Image (cartoon, rainbow, N blue to C red; front, side, top):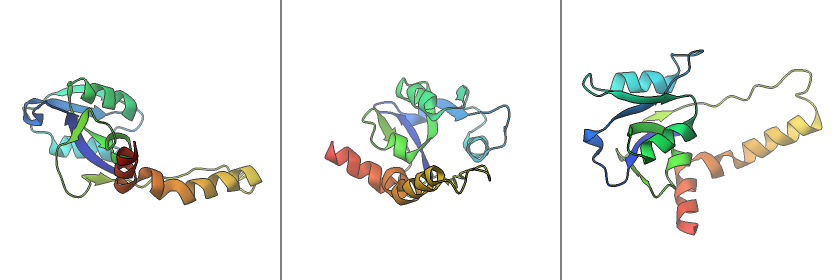
Length: 134
């Protein structure tokens, strides 16, 4: 899943602090490491959350700039991408399934649906196409 840095439309990202993912159970996940490497010492961390929709709301409100999944942010007219070019971070998503249920028709159908529709929903081009169609 590609991620990029976004800020509220009409706000200079250089004047903003950061919003960031944070999970006490897994503090070293890729988005947290990326923010810690990217953030300048003088840039404050204004908001942390475990959910990207909370971070998006903070960014939209002008609390700070932040890393968001491109599928969530590209179609949002209240957000602008801070850096053009390739995604800042690409994460691999994993589906964890219980061995007792992985062969059930329901599990197989769900996995096939995810596999078939993933690119259409989660890639930046798909988000841009959805925005243009709206």
